[in-house]
Image 1 (spheres, rainbow, N blue to C red):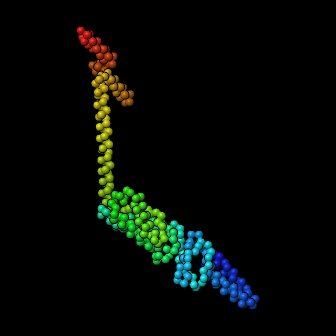
Image 2: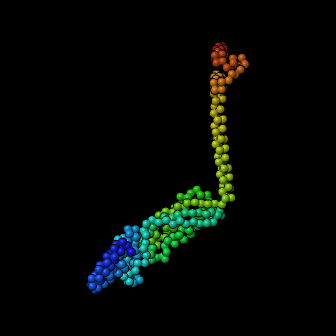
Image 3: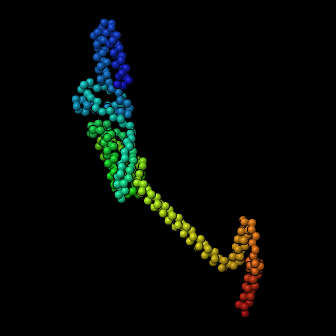
Length: 286
């Protein structure tokens, strides 16, 4: 009994009792009868509720939200439907994927009633039906999916489940808002195998990257060798720079033969180069 109906009934009974004690039994009896009628006929539905009412076994209509009245005995409220968004958890245990791998999948469905009349009259228990349909659809989806797709592409699986379950429940006045797969559990032995496979893939990728880097470095070395071959002094300057960087970072002393020092002397090298070019020009002129 809702608070408004309860208040009216209590007031009617109190007034009837007062009139009865004053000796006006007829008037008191009227108030008592009114209290009984109000208790049986005055109903109130919250803003998220719908009352499905039958009159003499036939559908009279759907009432709510707010206050409304029914005819006692003739009218009967057969269902109170909650139209808020609701959730139902469901699962599939030891379901085989398309590649015959047993998995345990847990999921949750978000749904709401959009047609209270259908939900009350088209099916006996729409809550239980949603749970059964969700489990069946989940097993069908698992059976048509590969394990890799089920693990890596959950969003697509969620959309597929939502569309499948929604198509089955629409005729009951139920709208499926969303379906989310919460967990996919696979056997421990298969987890170890997949872990080794993933590790092998990572090692393969690392070796490919390392090989690409070495090929690029070798290509740069070839370019540098060509430059040093065309400009010998560049090689000598590079060697001197390497020696300088080595002594600067490590603070070491390097002993070098005198002949090697003379070969690395840029001034001497330039003079030899110019002398060679000067000797070549007159010879070409002669």
